[in-house]
Image (cartoon, rainbow, N blue to C red; front, side, top):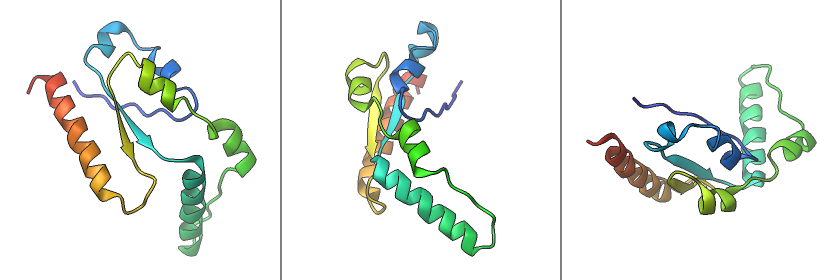
Amino acid sequence: MLVFVEFSRPHNLQALNQFSPRVLQRSMAIYLDVSFETCWQRNIDRIKRLREQGIDAHYVPRERMEKSYGKDDRDELLRNSPIPVIPIPTEERDSFNELDKGVEKALKHLKEILGS
């Protein structure tokens, strides 16, 4: 069975620890590594594109986004995760080379987990 679960900042490690050891024994995490500033700018750009298309789109105010997502536990997650974590840098929009490497590494690990 293959299940994808998405977590957002700030408590990734805490969220992972909610799963049973049985689930975690055949699990891995992919961490899309990007700064808060880049996330914020991508949200603004997305809303602008949607509005240009005539879609009534709204964004979360920056203060609220900073409070909810301004910090995360990346370093703690990488050090203390009960499962392998594969960080994939996504800071640069054109970082397809890094993205490809991360996806390759994730697929290799996924095949090991699934036994194929």
